Image (tube, rainbow, N blue to C red; front, side, top):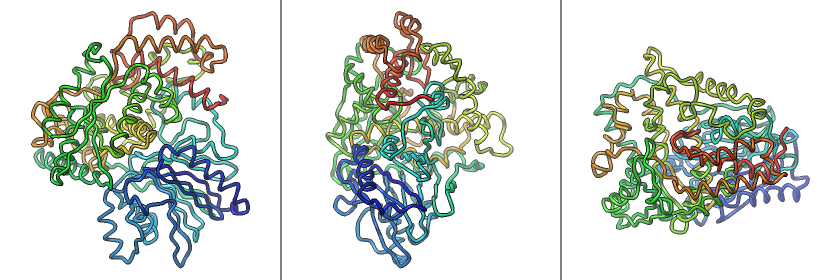
Length: 616
């Protein structure tokens, strides 16, 4: 994994001021250095500059970027962030076609494929990627993002120059690009956050390359096209065939994503998703005489303060212990205390460049910083709930009858601390509803499908486009902040394409949540783990944590220069702090309730202050 950045203007000559523009490329690298602490490089051509910082996972010796190759027609250059998991097969094919390789890196596979086949070659890649490809002969830059948006790629315009970066902060290194926030941006933060509209970067005039899209800039202007779209198709496999194919797809995805020149590890919570990934990895490594490193996460004294509820029926540790014994892994239990969690709230904003999932994100950032001390590559069980229908809103009547995002059914919890005038001026309900309706209209429809299946398809598509991407963003930024590569094999696009079209009666047979995945996991896991009731990512229930947040927010409100003061209602905040905690009514997802609202507001204040954001 890496970080990329750069700029392009086909009608400008940057080499006239080489020193200036090389310095800007180096500054873009410096800003994103955490994404790639092992190596860095820049490339400046007449109309284009590329920057790259590298985390060494594949081809540790010769994989330097930007990678440059020359042909009879001109020069090609690439800066790339990601991993191509079918790289070995693709490389063999390209060699047969006459391609010559100077390295063992997947970067060169992409570059050779592009030189031989053009942008159509991207369709052959199985992996996660954000790619910048420069073709000097055509005077053309292509920005390409993986199918599901697992790797980030933002861009903006500055005086007719296209500026791009893996992280938003990299854009601000370019002259004239400054952090600004208009009404739409405020609605992104307060009406949708920690989610955000796909294609938008929250800051004014900041966009992102859409998942599965290629944006091209040349002398004829800019164009964008989708090279991949999720499609609705009739499902003709029997249940047994569906289970068999699902099991094969999952095993193949995990095995492919074990590709690495350094040791891998897995996150292991003891839930079915991470346990399945761990079991496959451990068995493969065992064939090689190796033992898999695994990690699980919890909070200090959580056994004392844990509260069982509908969202989190049980603690994870006993289940992780069962899996460690079953799979024979080298396991570490990692714990986060209250102070580390609060301090990492602000580091999480630094990593995401936006307010994010509060302590759900800050704790993950802390845990990633601990994992990287042992392993630089890890596989996770992320995304199974969005793909296989694991969340409560896939099953609740309210989600079917509602006309809003099922993980954020009411806007009222979002307004509980806000000034009435501020909330009213934004039109939060209207903004969120418009975003929801846009996605509903885009949902691929299967002609002849009954209304119930059609609605289930809409809920599934909403999850893939919104909720899953929010968690993928969390995973990317929190891991890359510490130079850790976190992979998500269950989000292999082949799994998504197949499972999206499996009818609900097969996804949830006999009403069993994620029943299809569980049936596909037979033989991989102990029965008690395989059929365990779902329990999400852990959070702390220690009242001292909420008190700590409350004290921090009081300090912010006591500061007359705090940028969030005009946004919050002081009386509402104090009343909220004096009322009993409500852990059962999240304002976003399953985990973000009262304490997380306090943490989110602390993040918003820090973000406005740190980035010196001008509100228009």
